[in-house]
Each structure stands twice: as C-alpha cells, then as structure tokens.
Length: 255
Image (cartoon, rainbow, N blue to C red):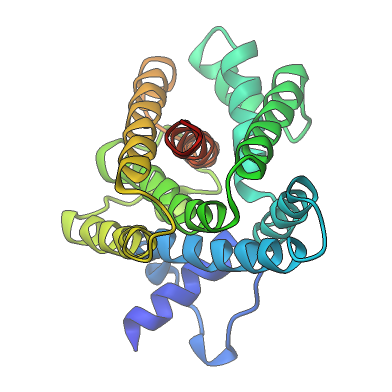
C-alpha cells in the first residue's frame, strides 16, 4: 500500500492527472517517489499511444502523431517541455553559474528556449510519423519510461544545484535500491514491445545507446556549468533522450 501511495504521489507531481483521495500526502513520501518516475512515463505513454492508435484509423500518420503529442503534453502540463526550454535559455544565454540559474528560474521564454522546443517537438513528431504504426506505438511505450529513467540517473548520481527549487523535494539522495526499482519499471515495457515484435531488438538497443550518450553529454555539461542539476535539467534530459530514442529506432527501421 505504501508503494502504491508513492506511485500516486509521483503521478500527482509529474502530471496533471487526478489521484484518489485516500492516498493522502506526507512531505517525506515525495523524497522517495522518484523511483516511480518511469512508471508515470508508462501512464503518459499509454495515453499518447491510445490517442495515436485511434487517430491513425482515420487520419494521416503526421496528424495522428501531432494529436498524440498534444495528449501527452496535456497529461503532463508541459512539465518537461518547460524544463527543456528553460535549460536551453539558461545554457545558451548565461555565462556564469549564477546567471544560468537566474535565467532558468525566469518564467519568460527566450530565443534559445523557443527555438529549442520547436525543433525538439518537430523532431519527435517527424520521427514518429515516419515509423510504421506498431513501431511507433512500441517506441512510445519504451521511450517514455526509459527517458524518465535517464532523468532519474541524475538524481541518483548528482547533487542538486539550488538551495531551493521545484525539484528540491525529489532531490534527496536516491538510493541504489530505489534506482533499481526505476530501472526495472522502465525495462519491463521495453522488453514487452520487443517480445511482441513491435520493435526489433537492434532498434531498442540503438535508441537506448543514444539515450545514454545524450544523458552523459547533458550530465557533463550540467556539472561543468552548474555543479549539479535542477528540476529544469531533469526535464531537459527526459526530452532530449526521448527524441534521441525515436531517432535511433527510425535509423534502424528505415534502413
């Protein structure tokens, strides 16, 4: 029951979806809820995949993917997209650690953020629209949990860069056992789509390899520029690794 509570707390924190009233809330629970971040990704992927599958019955793939992407963004309240845009603005416009953090905290979006989020969304939509129906569904169901696992890896291995912030409640030390739960949660849907034949093993491996490289690249940059990560950094890693996964899958399926 406590694990179920932690899942619902994570669902409430990372999405705008309602949770049962009986769950309740204790601040300490949020410190351990990040283990279910990939499980939340599976919920979002299921919503996006259902919209895509239904829309693809009567609409062209590009339109179906656009509606699917909109459904996913609505479910999360653009939580991760906002983090990606803020990270682009901060790293692009700031020259000192203090200035980068100041820009990332600003609610206004700048040129780097606007250009970055447009290109990011366009890349994801174009890649998914280019995949066959089952491959696109498999990519969605694998990428959302795995990309959130990549974000969890920052909580697991890095220090939080701010004294306060929207991710501070989740920024307590993530134990290896908690990360293992997150990894298992992400691995199960990825293995399922391969077992069902929706994605070739090579496509999954290529997408996952790209995710790892993108996460390492971002982690190194965050460490150099900020001395750690922020909540916006988690969103940036999730978005970039998700897009890279789709490109990896497309590279294998297309060829």
